[in-house]
Image (cartoon, helix red, strand yellow):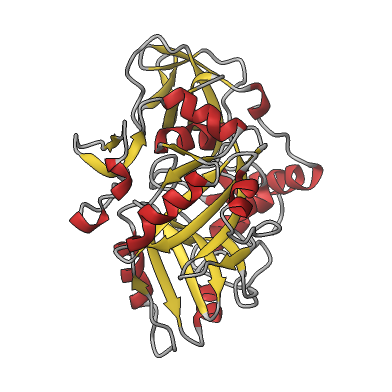
Length: 383
């Protein structure tokens, strides 16, 4: 799977790129993206997110809408999440999996006033809508890609709620809460970033109002911060991005989405068998960890760069960032068997796994299940 890239439709270039100091996001193919990587002060911008309130332009994300009377039961049947009873003004996460249980799309959902909204990785919305159209059959649903009309902003930091209040914008209360915005769109509570103290809310606004909303929020006390700052706190919080921190082999059990985007007791959906089997048997083939790199190189490793131990490849690097306190850090998918004290390298850089990401131990039920599977495979028990 290649790294998702923002669509380059001219209407998607953010007006915030005209703000003082703005430097456009660099893309893997050498081009530039439609949003700012930073506004001239990458590390101070991170600190503002961690300690105050920063406004991040994430309008490169694709936005999909699903109106229609059958939308929730339909999405329930084709994704990993329990959605048929999702309440109004509520957010969630869901995955679209392949028949073999590999992650194809990670969707952040908002249910509001008879429409389900989903935002996904830049450049992946068209493929998601194509899949949804194939699965419509005769149901009363109308999935559509609406990225050209709607844009996402993220307000991050311990003072985020205070900024919303000062701007006269309703503050969503509780995890996943969604409240409507005057003039269209909504505000959604998201999990905290960084070390868990940087509150986060997303605002979906009409694309034509993007600059005005940014002015409103900065006047209320937020500072503009680039996507690099957001990514640094996201990596610290170990929140993966589909297609960047995952690859074509990733199953939900390998990353945090098993807890946030998968309902383990719902009915059948595509890929469920793999998810259930790996969950019942315990540890998946790989696990997501935070790496600390020595930072000697000026160039950060690209997503997909191999992680090696001696001559063996033991994982792949996802997002690598320069963090204002932790130095160079990265998310990586590593083999479950990787030892905590293994000598690791990413290219020429020395890497170590964060001590909080030591391998998990199997509980007694999982250990017994694994032993039984091994016994069956070796034909050591009677039939």
